[in-house]
Length: 111
Length: 114
Image (cartoon, rainbow over all chains, first blue to last red; front, side, top):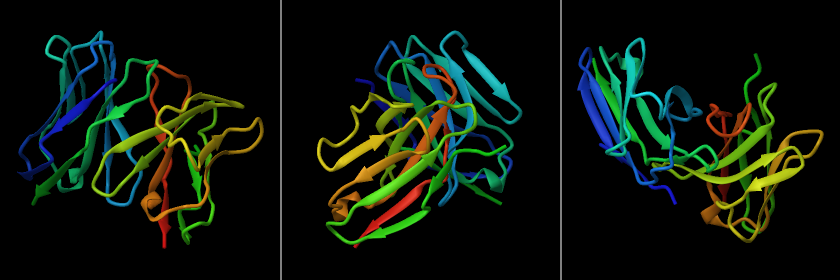
């Protein structure tokens, strides 16, 4: 089955700097890759997703890139703000299989 | 714009009791997924249901756990004879369709077994 690895587990950046979180997956059939943000005690919120027919997708300060050959995808947050502090999860699915999540990255943005 | 609803938000049960967790999907969504999240860990898939059907229960423990999504009413995750190891946050998510469609999460039920 699918296995998703996520790095780093914790990340601290200065406000205004960029943050990058990377995930690798094992199942070449996976073709849907969402990213979720979870604040302490809250629900995971879908922030961006990418499908395998696209190499990059951007939404304001966040972007996701996908390299299907290398089986990895990354989340990029630019101009980070304190409210970006949260745990971020990547996930992968082939569409007919359950979402498999990474273990999360705790991002701290230091003002 | 009602999102995914879950209740109760917090549930305390003594060992051996039963826990019932409820999930109402977003309007227009007919697919429900249950996940378990242990402290400092990611989300682990448990079961995927459509109305009156269990589609995939590959992540569900074989014993004590069951799920349903009746024709009328919310989806229910039932844990019988709870043990301390069942303490976790249980999230449900819903989607408009399966496959490459976004899943939206409810606020979760935090189960504590004493």
